[in-house]
Length: 406
Image 1 (tube, rainbow, N blue to C red):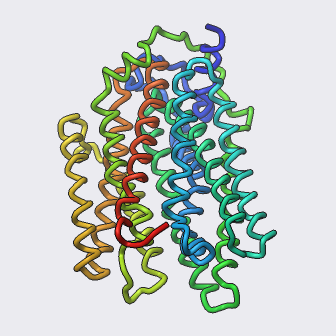
Image 2: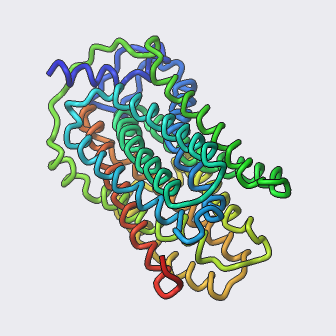
Image 3: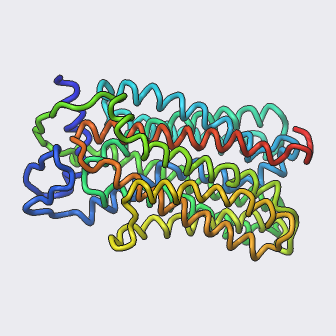
């Protein structure tokens, strides 16, 4: 009981930024009498979200570099496939033992692992002088697996912590996740433009981008490890449903998260790199497509802040999620018969629907849960999210059937 109680204290570290009376964790929607520092806490959540996926998004956006080094190994597809089993397996263990895990230490460990794997990627590239080969490729795959383990630690832990706070906090965290993709894509376009014509320019650009990623992970970990920002709140831990009961009660939202990403990952990023053909943009084409997806994904995660257009009905959420599977034939025919303008428009809609529906589900699902239940539910939803990504990545390989060999 003491350990569970300590976890609740640790999970409220963000609210130390707010000078506010003790809150009742049993009702996450109850408005406190006085709330100060909320804007600062929202910014902190955004930074933590940015630090969560900045490493992985950096690896995805330098896919053009890896295709030069390893042209026969399908880097975007293989690295994603390596990443997901480790993320899914680790999170399954953490979610099962959620009540026994110190969430603060879990989050710190995840950010530190992100930093170490990113640094190792840069060192590997520098040590090999940017050469390919199966040995270097295996090393990169190992670091991708490390990113998966780190993601399971951080994303599940942070989502669980924020699930029983204000909805704006979890929205800001998920906006930060998307912002890491959008800003890294922008940085990748800048570095490509700056070094494209120079000697060994592709490698120089990716190295500069990697150094920025290391700094971002250090910043996120620094926020986590600041002891002065932990709240000293003596919260009574209420009784909670078991994980199985929580899952059955919220199965519709869990399926939403699963199917939402099953519909996205067969397209992003493998299809964009390998199956969209050659167009006027040349080597810029997949980078532009990924940048458009990430940008609109980020913008869409702020749309649910407008209550009048936020979908909260589980029926309409499920209809919207299922309708996204129409994107798969749409992308197929656009790649086969359309030009790059139609593809850019289509990938933008994919990003909009992914960002909007993700935030809608993650902010609606915890309503009515007690604090510990919301924490456990956050881990469960992220587990289904990663499960959907894993299946989507596996289905992505169907695009290359008949189009080449591994």
